[in-house]
Length: 124
Image 1: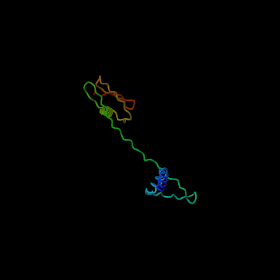
Image 2: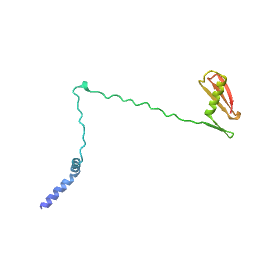
Image 3: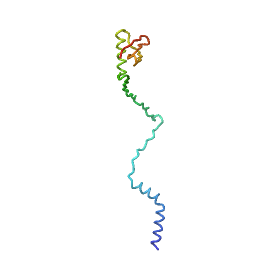
Image 4: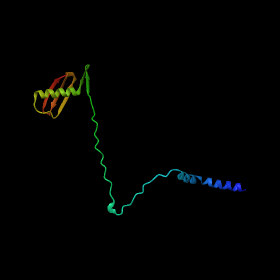
């Protein structure tokens, strides 16, 4: 009967095994070192962490290319704007502050307005 009592005790211990095994696993696993925080001697010594400022992010410049296709031709928009500016500068000395370009494929021409005052036309 001694063996029966021992098996009954083992069964009772095994019923509590999840609790015991967790404790046993905790004992077996290496303990992680946790640094103890020191409490400041007085409130004057308590320092707030400096506010972190995020570095300014530079936005990547978007490279664009606009091509107008008509009547079997391809015209690059930046080239048309550059040609309009060059035509304006050939006739005027004032700096270009703004330029509006209107491409009219049926006329095979581009019309421009510089600084909302001077208008002109170039052939494509």
